[in-house]
Image 1 (cartoon, rainbow, N blue to C red):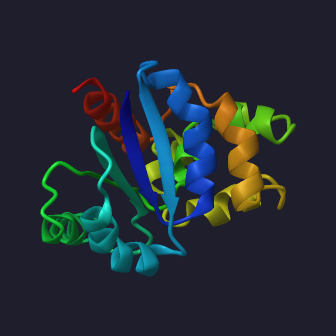
Image 2: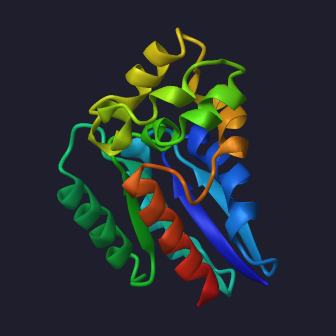
Length: 185
């Protein structure tokens, strides 16, 4: 059995992954989650966590929101922290700008998950065709759902309905492609 260890900045990412991973991982790959208390805690804890990990046959995935920072700088900083732990095989992915861009990339899933109607027809609006360009996806999702979306409960409700192939978020597709590649190695 191979283990994929996900180092995450927040519990909502775990809720999303718990629904998505069974759709893409082979049966012999088992996911585990290490949840940090925000992005600063994640960055402080990466090196220590990776150095302390002694279980064999593991691969690591670090996922962090871009928020308002520079994606390339954030990613390089995380890669450098992994190298400090002498781990050169860690997959680092940045959600543009927040995890919620994945949900805005599939408004049918939002509609089904939150038991709403009329959202799916907005997917082809210019704004939602490329949800990674929305600078505050969580605020947009809250506005779009009239306040129904809450980070953890919303992730738990929406993620099971996300269609893997049809999501409009490029960063979502890059995340899944990286996980699939890592799981297959």
